[in-house]
Amino acid sequence: MLRFSTAGESHGEALVALLSGVPAGVPVNQEFLDHELWRRQQGYGRGGRMRIERDTAHILSGVRHGKTIGSPIAMTLANKDWKNWEEILPVSEGDPEKHKAVSSPRPGHADLAGALKYDFADGRYVLERASARESAARVACGAVAKMLLGELGIRVASHVVRVGSAELSRAASFEEIAALAKREEVLLSCVDAESEALMKAEVDLALKTGDTIGGIFEVVVHGLPPGVGTHTNWDERMDGLLAQAVMSLQAVKAVELGRGVTAASSPGSKVHDAISYESETAEGKFTKFTREQNNAGGIEGGISNGEDVVVRGYLKPISTLRRPLGSVSFATREATKASYERSDVCVVPAAGVAGEAMVALTVARLVMEKFGGDSLRELQRNFASYCEQIKKY
Image (cartoon, rainbow, N blue to C red):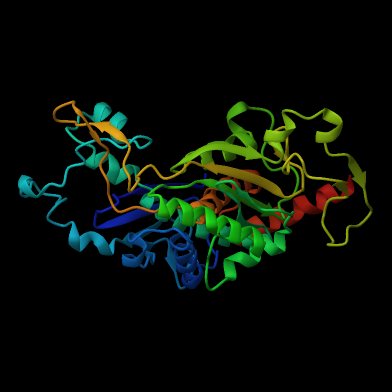
């Protein structure tokens, strides 16, 4: 099974990423991997931390001579800010006087719940692991998953469809969305310039008022054949796995597949995708069944249906405000203001990149479970054979 795990704290020495289950022979492009990490750090509204870090993945194992070798892939991402925290958060006992406590929990953050759960006197250790800094390690793993999927012609991309009350005003093609990843400058990762300008104004207002702002990102999987995932067991459904994967990202509070939100208030005749039959599609796709629309978001009954898989993540505003909300002191239990640490105003584009990683890892896992293979060539043979098989129906 393809699986991953991460370790490390926001201000620790490094983040660690461990990815296993990748077949041997997958080309690993270091430049692409680091570019994915760069994309996660970009976007209008990012804070001072991103001026310190320049993420790069240092591969320790699982890759030799530019290709995977079938064993677990271990990577580290150094935190350049560690030099400022080495005495504050040492591994050894160190000097307790230098500890930098999070003395009052931030509303909306894990500070309070985590401190109570783990019996901490303040929220520092909770903040360190709960921070979205952890998502950089996920992006590193997701980049490898993208390289694996790319060898099968499956691509994953994201864009921002809403920031605050400013929303993308038109539909976007997959090629438009994919082209965003090649931009040398990332603003708010929106395909439409006018909509992006309105989104920027929302961020400016939040910055001016000492507030933060959230939004919606959309991840699209292109080129996935029908039949990946299953309806047979609740914990193996593709839609459920994708929802859990995206919801696990920091600050994501809702997940939508296809037209999931508006479908709830629409009649079935306006929601379900009428099916057509074509002897050959313009793109030479392997399936002969097509749909007039993609309201289902590429998944029906927990199984991919051959259309683009479309997943949206609804991101709440960052919980660290420059004008802090009311809170309570951990030490005295008296009313005070919430703690403040250097933070972002808007992270929706960055969350989209992390969302791509989680979607790519989930789809890659399901692809490996269906088609199998200890080497890339074996996987490609199995994949091609299946694609030929479904042409017969």
